[in-house]
Amino acid sequence: MALEANFCRVQLDQPGPGGVEQLLCVRRTRLGKTGQQICVGDRVRVEGIDWPEGRGAVAALEPRSSLLERPAVANCSRVVVAVALEQPQLDPLQLTRFLLTAERTGVAVDVVLTKADLLPVAEQERWRDRLIAWGYPTHLVSSRSGAGVEALRHHLTQPGIAVLCGPSGVGKSSLLNALVPELALRVSAVSGRLQRGRHTTRHVELFPLAPGALLADSPGFNRPDLPADPVALAALFPEIRARLSEASCRFKNCLHQGDPGCAVGAEWDRHPLYLNCLDAALKSAAREPKPQTAGLKQRGSRQEPLLDQRLRSESRRRRRQSDPDEP
Image 1 (spheres, one colour):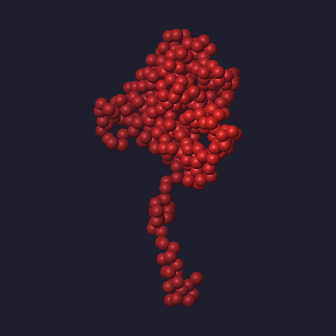
Image 2 (cartoon, rainbow, N blue to C red):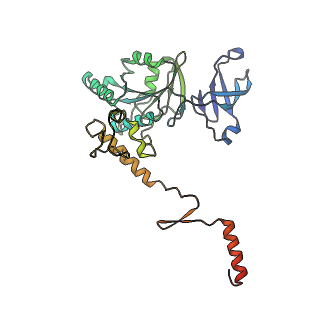
Image 3 (tube, rainbow, N blue to C red):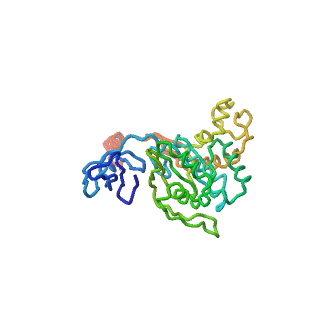
């Protein structure tokens, strides 16, 4: 399924009359009124079908098994983070932030290193081994030479929805063209001055790789969001999860900054990257306005009880009766 402006393109489980396989659908107003947002990958119920025109209306959403927020894809079973080894050069911090976004879905996460042909084999393998040590299956591919493409296609033909995401300009559209040649997607070169990619893909769409196996392409972006709660950050690092499965930190609220009594320690590759993300998450949380407690009003650094409006009006009425000069 794909979202196109105010319409949804829905793939049917079984062809309809005349062999119709897809419907162009509007969304029922009641979905918006109940706060239900349709995402690519959602399973939906369609009604009011006009088979000759291939049109219908989405009436309801089925429960989701997972949701990737950026890009918004529902029911994905695997997230594939694609980054280039060169042009643009691989940035470990940027890759880490994409991996954190992928980890928040709770599904399997893979890494694809594109443009592998631009580096010597020894350098390619060094990066692959490093990312495997982070805890991620890693695939080296070159869309230009075709190296690694067939092995990746075989890996992705498992039933379910795999989401391809990553920074702009790393060659996601080229990789899709290599995986599914009949797509012939438009591609653009990386900006020579800034070494940044141009956003070729404008929306998320599902493409069939094999029966039951779909691959979602997504628009590139360069700055994924961090979790709102800094405490939740550690659980998104496979290295931290592995260490905490073997030992516990001295303090329950440990942020794993390498302090005495921390079971995670600081002797692991991504510890500086974790500290960078933790610092950014703590600063972001500090900027968030603190929720006001119900029934309290803020006065300086103190919170005072708020008087119920009905009691306040009754109090004023009584004061006026006892003192006519009361305003």
